View 1 (cartoon, rainbow, N blue to C red):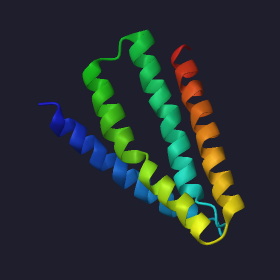
View 2 (tube, rainbow, N blue to C red):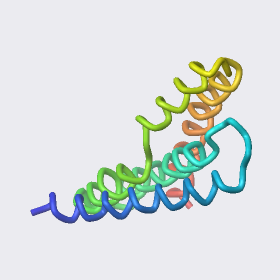
View 3 (cartoon, one colour):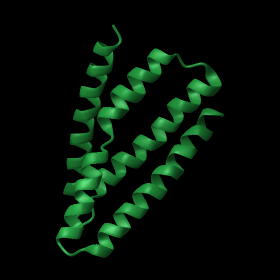
Length: 121
């Protein structure tokens, strides 16, 4: 049953997200959520790589489900990204919220494309 390894991988991804976010945020005093940004961009890179490995190197559907939906699904976080952007807006930091939204989407797309490109090497 594929659901069990996906769930275990998701749990591991969530723990990694928490630990990495805390480590990054401790190093920054900025209002911007650098931990979430780093996690989502690195996750996009890895999602692109996994997708590229499936498309160009025959990575199995089970491996994609475990790595993509499981580990990286647990690692990345759309809800935290949206909540932090909304919180910045609520605090009156409209410029920071806009920068966070724009930079996250642009960097995430670029990272996903880079991951696809890495799979071709």
